[in-house]
Image 1 (cartoon, rainbow, N blue to C red):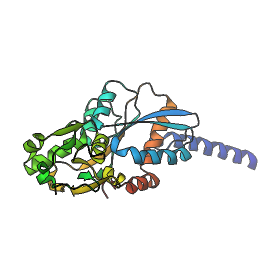
Image 2: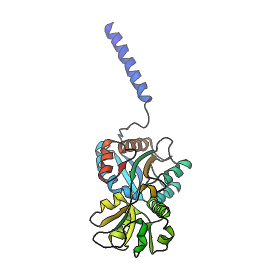
Image 3: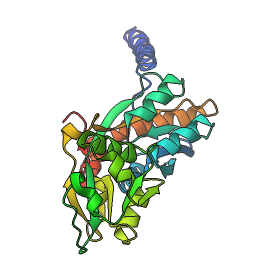
Image 4: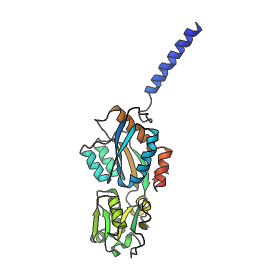
Length: 270
């Protein structure tokens, strides 16, 4: 009789455990048991940190293969709008994420403002310039700027507008670059005397470029925020959805955040 009661109690406990599991949030880190590939679209300025995180995440979820697509947030947004396969979007500005959300292309409740950054003015290492800050950039022979649909390009234009010299800057010899990486390359290779990039990018190439000045917060209309969210992918399998959820959760972990901080990012809100 005691064995029968014990058996009944164990069965009830098993049912309750299963029901309790069904009630858990879908945003909990998932364990992916089948080989799965997911597509992560990330801003160019995240390339170095995401590459390191990729190797760390492989130890947590060995069955998940991360396929990165790195470019300007504006370009990535357009690709998503045109139907490119994408599971996660990690933008260098809230504008692109907000626009995709308004279009119904981002899963409800999945967006997190994860990181923040600074905008800096740079020159090639060891090369002299008369430029000492954003207010006198026209003293340079030329300048590399990302396009206005690229977050760092938009931030640069905000800064120059606030200072009051945007028209003079645009009247210079301007190398309009596709993304922040292209700006960094143009300056480091001395194709352009100065350029505007993120602090993290400048620090990643400290042997090749030097920071002239860091933009003051009051010269920018909005802070540099990096949001990440899940993209609506109707073609994704259940394993892909679980893998995307697992990676999104991992990016918020202490281990992943430590990598971002290593590369100069600030954890948003801290």
